[in-house]
Length: 105
Length: 193
Image 1 (cartoon, rainbow over the protein chains, first blue to last red):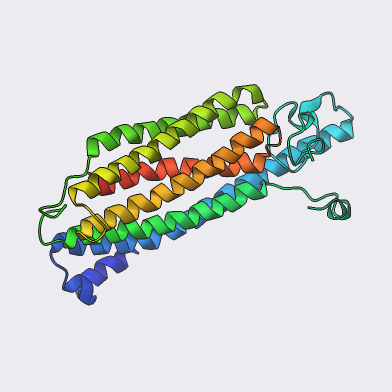
Image 2 (spheres, rainbow over the protein chains, first blue to last red; image 1 turned 60 degrees about the vertical axis):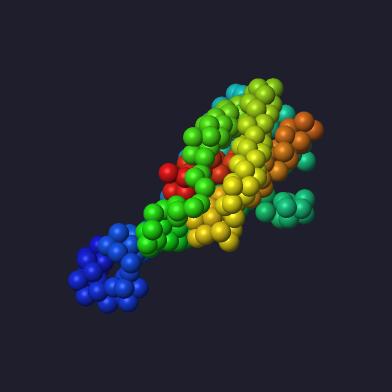
């Protein structure tokens, strides 16, 4: 992409950039074009990465609960299967009756 | 989800609360909006044939706003503490930092209102110059978001008081406030300095 920007600079094809007030303004046009091109890609990339990490964390937690259930080793509140509301629910979370949990509904 | 739907899909579980997911999408869209404003401001600033801010326009109170910026950053930190206590189930420890975060956020918005009154009195208006137009547009847009986030935090506070606070509401409101806090230093640097 930077290569394309450099090529555009040598061609000076954009009338806005070409007729800009000064060099600083011309550079600002270039930088802001790059900024607005990259920003949405970064934001979408961040969102996808965040969601994938949450899914992996969720699946890991579920697998651990399933293994514990197969072994029959549920010993405390912290090992209860995920209720689908929050990840890493703190101990006692589902017993407190918050909205959206079985007791708080 | 209704009880019937829940019975029909007993295996269905949420990875992320709806409120949090919706707020993440909203915040990303708003980041793009502010990206556009920052870009336009940069172009206008560099295309100015005279100095920026233009001669005859009042100077922005950068020092006083720095104190306000600190208040907002502390507010974000306090909300982080409250949110962490909530996720750990230490509900009795949530209220104090949450109240302090809301109070500091309210101070930030009120101080900005006071600053605007001063600047309008000194002659900086939306139509006085490009500088004035951009100042009120960018800072005003951020202020509106800060106000909306404060309303969301108020609902969190109310939910906490009544014992009906869901992870989605707290998570969503917290993400909104963090975004308001993170966005402000960037805008301060672009507009005030």
